[in-house]
Length: 359
Image (cartoon, rainbow, N blue to C red; front, side, top):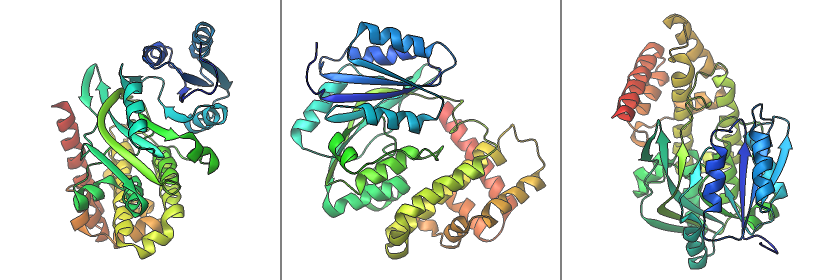
């Protein structure tokens, strides 16, 4: 039995995960470090997830269950933050799991250097195949003071940090497998933006960074992430333009002055917009479920750009030296109004990524 303030609060939003939840919870219970609480927030599940949560909580008093009407993952995480009592906050999705020694790894990092956020690596699992989700480079990196500016840039576009500093930070925009100082979050009233469907993690982490003194990044695998092909990041999305616009606006609201005065933030913002445009192609304009003609897709792409001044600004300010192959060619073709060519380039980029994933 654990008494007093828990050291870790593990926050887990749950929605229709009856197949996976036990594996996630068991991975927490297997940890040798026992001073934790796990908050399961059922987000209006329509299967047996809620009853499974209650069953798990009845057998372990460290597990807390809260049920709410379906409001999305951000609202569920915010409720978890509200209920949490731990000194350190850890998020994990209900279909993911921790490695057996994860909490020991977290404790060692906290003992070494006191930080506002600790970022760790994880593996991905897709169709039973386990692969590294990302390789952080260097193996260990601590940024403080003005150096934190680069982590803020990473929340916009991590490729830029790799290009300029040879620091590989792909994957750090997510919140899972990170450890957060609860005091930093609650003192500054940092929450997830419930209006966002994409990049809510990155926006949350950007808000963390601007209130942080020190952040550590470690290339140590502490868990597994299950790729969900049905999520908004992978499936056909008819309202992707609205979702992208919300994301771009949220980034710009936080970085407007920096974009106007700091060339690195400006390049990173252009890179982030290039990601949004490619996402619009992948999940809508060039998705197999889109049965409209090529002409209609060109019109929709043109309308997407015309209706968003921030996208137009990014395209007009594109510097191909700071974008990877694929995105640089797409952005340049859009700059010169070559919509058919940009769609063709997008199609080739999607084929390449699909082939790369298959091998």
